[in-house]
Image (cartoon, rainbow, N blue to C red; front, side):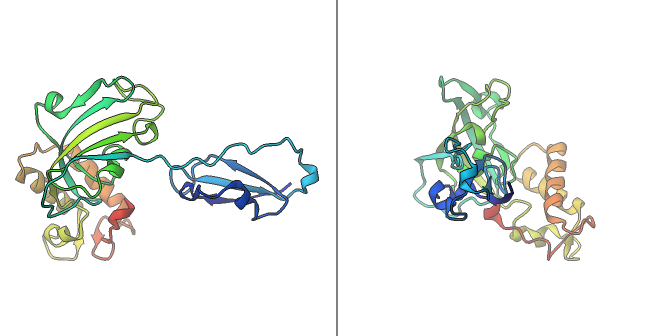
Length: 254
């Protein structure tokens, strides 16, 4: 029995098993839930044995599972929107987080952060996957309610007051959007010596300036982590610099 495997994206889960079987008439398809190219990809194994060698009662081991999605409800939206959030943007937000199962509050920037909003970068998994998915295309002054399934939240492990496999509800207010360190608009501003490449020092200086400009507390470890993440993804030749050519960030793929 031979099993030839290929990656199958869960985004194509609208395919029925009957349709998949057309790839190998008379063969048994076995769908295994395994990570593919994305977090919820699957591996499709086509067994090329003759049907008579396969017991009729053998069933498909697992069904294709649709990719988890965040439910988004716009609670408030401004009349005028000059800019919408995209991957790589810095966002200043106030938020409240609740457990769906009992409605209990587990965190609030109004109550637990000295009343201060927080900055974070959209699309680099700095926050929850559910935030990266649910806060794209948002306007300053907009308020959203996100219902985040466990797979896009804290998953099987949970965290602190959040039990494993918890569905989370967030009410999020967007106060400000700034160019993040990954935006094309920021390249020339970061390139202090005009050599068409960015050093870690130049990127860190830019980060500090952006945060201080808006009265945010400068967190050295936070900036260092951001810089390392940026260079890990952008510095293709690993020479310690991000060239103008390497600085080709596709925001929607964050």
